[in-house]
Image (cartoon, rainbow, N blue to C red; front, side):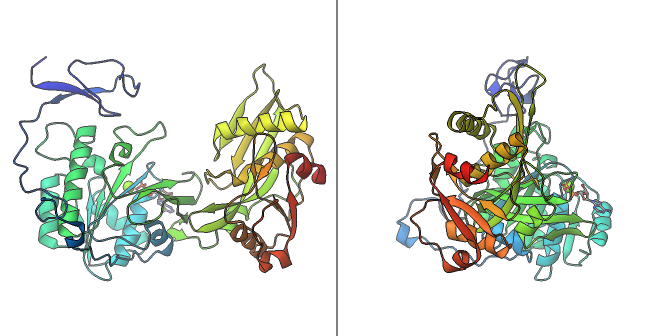
Length: 453
Ligand SMILES: Nc1ncnc2c1ncn2[C@@H]1O[C@H](COP(=O)(O)OP(=O)(O)O)[C@@H](O)[C@H]1O
Ligand SMILES: [Mg+2]
């Protein structure tokens, strides 16, 4: 091995002098690539995020940034961003191939192009391919400049020359800096190109959006390694084989996280969904067992979601447990509580849980709904279709209060629900929910189940 090379793990960026079969940091096999050591760092004298001198100064003398955001013209997307693109921000949009990243960016470019020029850099598709898509989704505009450039230094030159209002880089994995010797898409390349784009965005005030691919197995040199560099991280979720798409903010330096944007993929591009509850429970079957409606709060919005459970006798000694859209450990915990506190012998059965519509729910207020869906399937008794379940379950089987109870109940009332099982909360219930929904307050899981089964 030559002295001036080293090996780097493609997954996590772990560096080693020797080639290794298995990465000691992330455990990936056969992921080491040989990389030539860079010549000693260039002159870094005048680099600072503000473009001004990097010398420290008192906080009251720092110029406040002018946060007049650039609206994308798509309300669902603006909400996720916290009200539009902040000037000089670097945003990462990640997602599996084919989920709709380029489509969404083209739609946004079209809207922003009404106010000024947009530079769309694509290292993935040729300009004529992009034009074809733009024609299909009606996003042709003379203010959208297409570039097929993949060398970072040339891209920056193009931005400098055209002075656009907004830049899209599709995708970061195809871009490389000519100052590094490693191949495009390797961890060192995407890290370097991203941080150079960050400096450029901050200095010029031009918001830049970068697209990054992730794969099911978890990113190959993926955007995960970029999350701490960029200002905002958005991920596209949802099943590629269905039309529903969800954009979620994982990190946001200029707004709240966990806001969701809901879209439907059509031949005319992504159409925003304004009524999430309708979207998630619209196709729900009636009078089947194992289906319960819960109300989750994501960001600032409450939405009704259907939980589906299937409990069936296990063919093997070790029963299978599977959860799509909720944490599998939460499922194990709830099963243990159900078995211990309610004396249902579920321990030997297979249990499957699914959140209909491809949403992932992380908040505990849906516990009660999960428990009801499981027991409904286990006993083969359907749940009344006009009932919504709200409540967190504690280890001793107690039902704990949840946040934003009024917001949840109002959403249920809007969607025509008649009955709600809720925790015995001290919070005052607003009249809207009170007048339209029969509220049943429960203290424990046992009490709740005795009312139903
Ligand atoms: N003619 C079409 N009609 C409807 N949907 C289409 C059509 N062509 C492509 N799509 C949708 O667009 C998706 C590709 O989106 P794209 O923005 O290229 O994804 P990404 O950039 O995330 O890889 C396809 O998976 C498909 O769902
Ligand atoms: Mg694409």
